[in-house]
Image 1 (cartoon, rainbow, N blue to C red):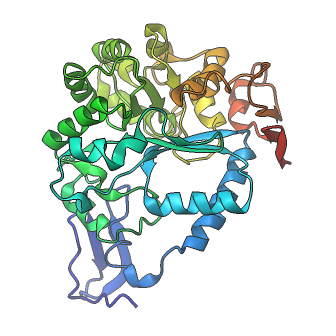
Image 2: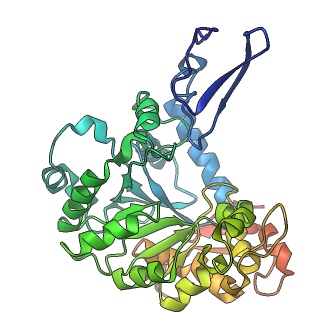
Length: 390
């Protein structure tokens, strides 16, 4: 269906079309990257998700999250127009079972050479402050990323190939050409800061650029975000505190799946730089948890922050960085609300706040440590309405 034969060239160095000893294709395609290139190029004829698929999948996804007691989500990667359309369509059809807060994922390819200060000062004004929307669905702020030729997930070559399918985004829901060269990223960040638009990044190398921007237009305590934190030094943490940043974690990857490898890479004396959650909290940096959908249950990151075990070896990764159960619970609740400027009306159960709460299968504070990850919701309530019952 896709007209692939022995003469078909791989679209990028990260993609391989396997051949047997006779030079015939075996049908196996491999790629050394987290985000698909082959699907969006070679396999375009194999069929794609429709708008109806996305709407139905969003509703099922919300039920999956609600089944583990999640009442609100934040998407740090940003959302493309294709995904936003699905959210708007679902909102018209049925009440949400999970509240949603989204960053915007721009497709920079289509803006040409328009200066960022012009762009964000005109059509981009809606991204400013806390965005637009309501308690169920709010969109605001900007996802930013700097290109890196050494990283296949940020390479301009691979991302241009992925973006060739625009407006289609496959599974991701964000635009692949949201990355820019570093000099353009800095101009974009300055323009965003000047227009009150909050920015979020997923790579630690953006921290230095946040500092440079702050020297031009102050961003202190505007709750800009560094997400998916992996390795942070003592100086990095001090800088984050000085800028008033919020961090979101990816413990599913950087502790649970690759913790042992990262420990080896960190070398002697470097273990406390690996997802240094305790150090961040001690410094006064708000720590929030993220699942990255692998798996969807937030009780995995909660558990990982408490036990810090590597999946394969069982080794404890940087035990000094363990959180207490109380600290982990706060990161999963109040700090999540703080991330989205909503700490005054959700994140805790108290008079005047939204009626979002969950009855759990076990008590997080007393259940056996390794059973924390297996906690599920018996029922989940959002806005006083039961949205899930086991």
